[in-house]
Image 1 (cartoon, rainbow, N blue to C red):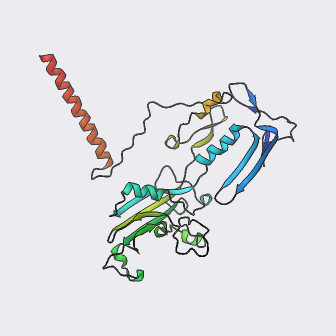
Image 2 (image 1 turned 180 degrees about the vertical axis):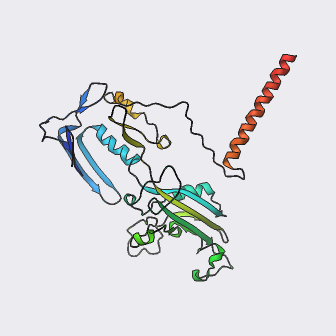
Length: 317
């Protein structure tokens, strides 16, 4: 249990701390001088629905800012493991590489995030502690392909033959390091949707469809899943006081919702560094990403030379 001078926080309940003599707790803010209470005397929590998929709670008597803080933390700061990088080696289907990669990135994974570390920011090296690897190697069965999976040759580059649909069942987990031993009882596979069906309904595929193939079409790729990063970090400033700040601007949505509340808007400083520009170049062509930027610089130089030549011509005339 964590105590401060106004509230006590245990694993499940945030309630006024009456043990220290503060019968009417207040929430102090910086700058505005106003005081507000996050609790009413008759505050209640009612749970209407709670299962593995859905949770519906009524917070009665609580200040909106407290519940909104829960909402924003759920959306942005609860770490999960998701596929972040996809390396496409062969794709002869009608689905574009970037569309297929986006679909794969949305696949829910049966990976417990508390058992993994965040990926180091100073290197891209993967290990069993910070990464989960998957591979997808499928081919749509043609007339000349074997009907039995066991007769398929590994040197052909394909491990799975499908009739038409490529689903999340075909995404194979490839253990890194000691993952095969650690997760022997709970493989890190894509999450299988548990849909209750009547006994008379059989043969229903509840897996997510990634693509549809025609005979002879192939998909070969590798996917890497990482634990998501937290946007906000807390560190001591020059005065030794704890201060919350944006840890990585690349993951920040730069919300201005805080300025809608007079009692806290003066406690937050929202600013931009106009001299720091994040510039991304992505290449899906024969040109490398840095070659595209280099070519753009050459075009701009050519435009400037043309403009200067025209200005000199006007002055000479």
